[in-house]
Length: 234
Image (tube, rainbow, N blue to C red; front, top):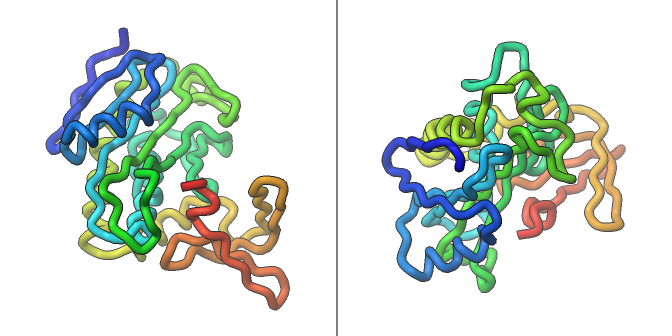
């Protein structure tokens, strides 16, 4: 049994068995009328696997930008609970790094019938962090980076506080401060960057992120944008 989680308002917590199917449970919760800011987590200490239920106010094309606020919330949350000297950065589109090793990932769960130009009936920000037990998509764990006493509950509590702060910043000041801070902590920004989507590999100089969250790559005189939707798969 994992440690007790204490979340600030307006969050409400629901814990599920460690082997539950999180995405299926999210769809059931929405159908049952669960409130926005409901946090659903799998009950385990070695890995944080959770999602925050959201009520978007904008079309999906813009609402998808929440992944950047989620990454900043997780980055700041990890910085608050990890020892000094651990460098927390980001890899496009939604990977969080600890000392340049992938340790966390942000994703989205959406209704199947959501259109890009329509406001989703609901969406959920999904968060996975390798606390003590890595998975195939991760390169390190928080324990490997000097956080032996840290449990998934501590990470979730810290993330919840900082995520709320970044969501409020986005709502009050727009996407620009979110984008600027994300890029500030992206070691690939301004450098040669290679991205593989399926069997296709794209390379170029990582020059920025556009207003829709797309990656901007420059190769000579050519400029290419990699859609955030395509990169996330949602």
